Length: 271
Image 1 (tube, rainbow, N blue to C red):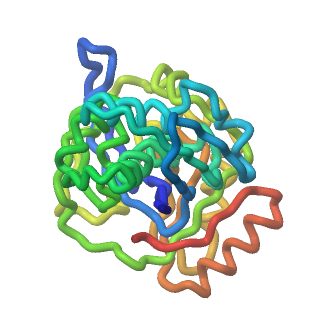
Image 2: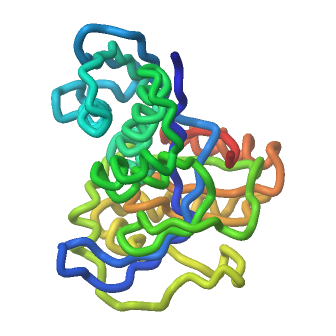
């Protein structure tokens, strides 16, 4: 069996207050792409994980990999001892603001739900996903949505973006989320209004991420200068930046420019 783990993007990310549990209340617009990792699985006596792909090394196939943690959590919730031989083709950069680990964990839940014949609705998997990480519930659904609280209080986003040409650019720099959160200026600039255009929204982590990796500013400036770009933003805590385009020709032209700079690129669409 096969399952795609779609890369997550944040079209907006507004930080609000720090919670007693150490997380921040936030408001974000999640979207998902036709680009991502691929998981396959077949029945086996025990759980195992193998990996391949450009980012297999940085992701690591150790026992604490989120894919295996998701598998064990599903085993426990279902009360079964079934195993699986899981293989992950890792294409999403690590520590890149694209939710790669969360997307892989969510894909593992969907995949093993079928492989083990559970056939639970996605809603039944949401509590397992929430225990694995704040982004995992959204990655489980893989739909454009508004996330509140830790990001796991989800509701539909009222505007369809399906099929919109999208370019992802990463300057080949890994940025850890913790230091970016720590560098936020703690100024609450207000929440997300779905009645406003996406261009009127923001990513409150951008300045802190640029302080850690100044090349992010170069990526944003390059994308903003490209023909046909209608929205340019950093995704999550960086360092990946995104641009939505009016047409695929403009997107592909911009992808060539970014690739010539030596940066990682993925020309895709919003699913």
